[in-house]
Amino acid sequence: MNTTFSKEEKAAMRAAAAEAKAAKLGADLEAACLAAIADMSGTDKELAETLHGLVEKHTSLAAKTWYGMPAYTDADGKVVVFFQAAAKFKARYATIGFQQDANLDDGNFWPSSYAVTKLTDADQKQLVALLKKAVS
Image (tube, rainbow, N blue to C red; front, side, top):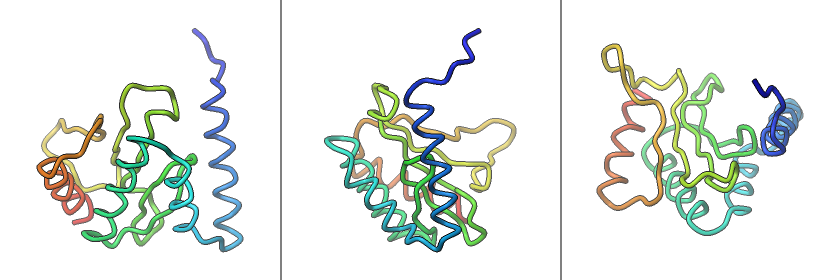
């Protein structure tokens, strides 16, 4: 079994450490989130901007970065939803994921992350429903 971290995983860990330090120093966490989105390109940037707008419009979650990617936290500072750009780990799709503090439980088995290549109007409507349920 290979236990060596990839270059991308090491960069994400460094980003997480820097984020924790910045938060302790009172940094503008939303500005960091917006900067992370601005640094993206193409479809990743478009998807992240769409998610950010939907979170802002339909929830009270606060923006920040998490492992260098846009993330949104509840009042206790716990990540509820995050965006992982496809380019971050050279994947064929971006991911919108929900952490354990998202109220999405549905029986014994439910999705907690979604592969995304495009967000149509219908997709956005479905995502808004998930966001609202996650923060309910």
